Image 1 (cartoon, each protein chain N blue to C red):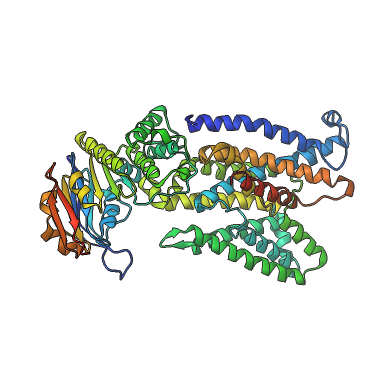
Image 2 (cartoon, each protein chain N blue to C red):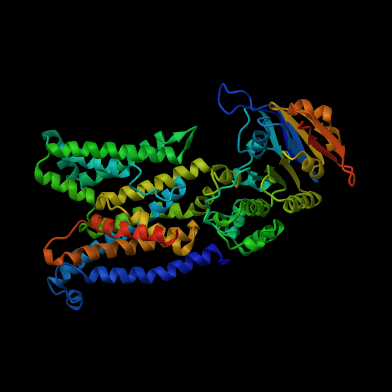
Length: 262
Length: 340
């Protein structure tokens, strides 16, 4: 039960005849771990994330959630084991932030989908965890992009799944909320959860993750600790760009910078 | 707003039930002729006949159809993620019209007339049945052609519905050219939506038949909320999106089909009532669906009463579908305007 996610040799193409978006990728997340998926555009990161949540079905390979094959889980069971935060959130919702956070309780509700007091409590706690409590009664359509992202983050938190899969969760967040998100994920990991993040910000990836998976053309090109993966000789060919890596003078974490001639 | 969905739904029902009761009272009290309630209850004729054979059945029919069309409107708006979705933009009206036109043409031929006589002999109403069949066939067509990659695609389905409706109205127009004037009149009246006087057992049957799709939709309400997150967002929360769409679409189509069979095409109810209700209750379908059922019942009963009262002096009355459109269109614009 210590393995939250075990995806083995996944293959997926979006349409027959299209090139494989994911071409034999494997990834594991164990309890207590935050794993980052990095790589250039169209490397298959988002597709891999969706395959791991059962939103797409691999044409070959297998996904296990807490040692049970995804195919054997009901949709609700699946949603109780893994929470997914897509890259883009609907902007035109007339639902309030609180109502959206409560939607995260859906996999825990019965036939008529009515929440009990404990669900309301969980949603409120999740809003606080994502620093969205003051937004609770505002319609989501009236929020800024970053505020909206925090509300949907609260929805994912409220789902209470051991594994969280987040696609580009920090893209619209300011620095303080990026830190807040990473801290929340790390806290959940310490409590026995785990997370898999698709990230473009390599410095943040190095700071936030225990392990990084570098993807290129649907395959895993490199995997290891941030110090092992965030090296110029690994990153430069993958991104087809000359990058420099220096150690943060305070924390020693690798900082990645593209070399831009001007 | 932090109240639970259950308590908000109950509160909406508690507020709306008296409104429905009031509407029913108004509906029962207004009509072409004068009627004394006391006399009717004592069995004095013709008041008793007016009350029990005319007013009560008509008001009940209006309530049932108004509720069904509103609930169907809510469901279609949710599953197409389009606030302008209406039971009749979906090709359902076109399908029903084609069914009716087919029956009217058939009744002109010897074989068709014989078949229709046989059908009505065993208690079936050929025009109504053809309308339901036409509406359901159109629903199936929209659902089949509106799919891409195995899923109902909202914009696609809507395009198919709109195109099919135009096609159907062209066919109906062509048919009308060859009909006798009184047949044309019948088709026209039906197309614009009229409330008739049905027998009580039939009304009871329709009520029960409409309860099934209504309950299916209310059970789906929580999942309809999640559809607002997008297909992927809903699926990530454990919703079987294709199955939910399928169930909601056919429950809504059945409700519309049954309504259309009795009244023809009463437009605007499924558009105006849900929008008005949402303004007060917010978007949660667990509250919007029951509230729209009650609001729709009250709306159509009142629209019908208005039709009868306004035109009392003229000795005729407009089809109720015309009244819902005349009242509904400005009301809808006002609703849109009020929340710019």
